[in-house]
Amino acid sequence: MFRHLYLGMFISKVQQYISLLLQFTRISEYYGSIFFISCLGLFFAGITDSFRIVMVVIANITAVAFSFMFNDIEDAEDDRKDSSKAARNPIAADLIGRGWAYFFCMISVIVAGLIYYVLGWPTFFFGFLSIASSFLYSWKPIRIKSLPVIDVVAHAVQLGTTQFFAASSLNLSISTTIVLAAISIFFMSAIADINNELRDYDVDRAANLSNTASKFNMRVWTGYIQFGWLAPVFLILTVTLMNLSTTAKVFTFLFFALILVVYFNSAPQTRRDHFFYVRSQQIAVIWGCILLFLR
Image (cartoon, rainbow, N blue to C red; front, top):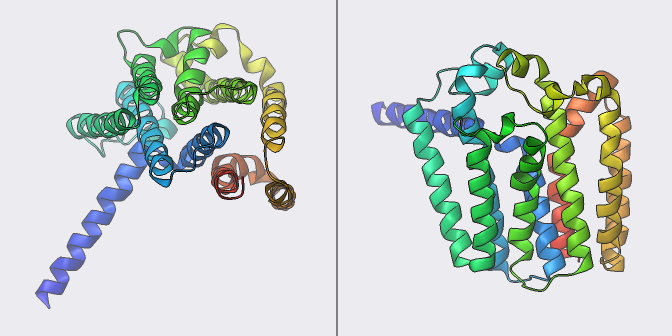
């Protein structure tokens, strides 16, 4: 009886720690996006080897996890000043100590770095660029995220573009479609960064963080920023559909028709946040699978 009781307590503790670690990595915010970007790079590079597909996806997600975790470590003191950001940052909420936080960051860098290295020097180069730019983006002595314009460019490079090239560089050939896809991903990530800066506008100003949104008072453009997604999304759809098989095209169109139905049947008051912060990650995974398995 006591053995079962202790086992239950142990399992409960493990689940609690795993949940806390997932919160720290904030994987729910990007797992689908990075999976899709990786699949897109693999698709355009013509990679079909299962081992390399799985490895580059794991490495990319792990590298991005480092970016989010290290950012939370560096921002902890500022995040404590805002209840909503403190709740999102387990270090600011005193749920994880800095020692453990640095340990998890180190493990993520080692895992991602080793996988990138095994996959070859071109992939290792882009993986290293992803990790290094993530570090400099948040590290307070430099803190690129506080440099107007440069912050947006750095975000676009470290979250999206480098992961795409890490996957596509498994095949050393380069094509027009790879370049166009990379440009689309770059601008989508840049727009996402501006959206985040607008979301955190008041907190960032209180912390004396002079980023692009605050420097140029972009709050007045909040209602228009969302339309910035249209051009890169249309471009990436176009170049992808041009290279898909007929079967994959049919599945893609049916899939996006279903997305529109789900979107317009969602409650208007929660439609934007629920769709873009929850459903979008699920959608990205499904479309990534279409690219990998139907081609």
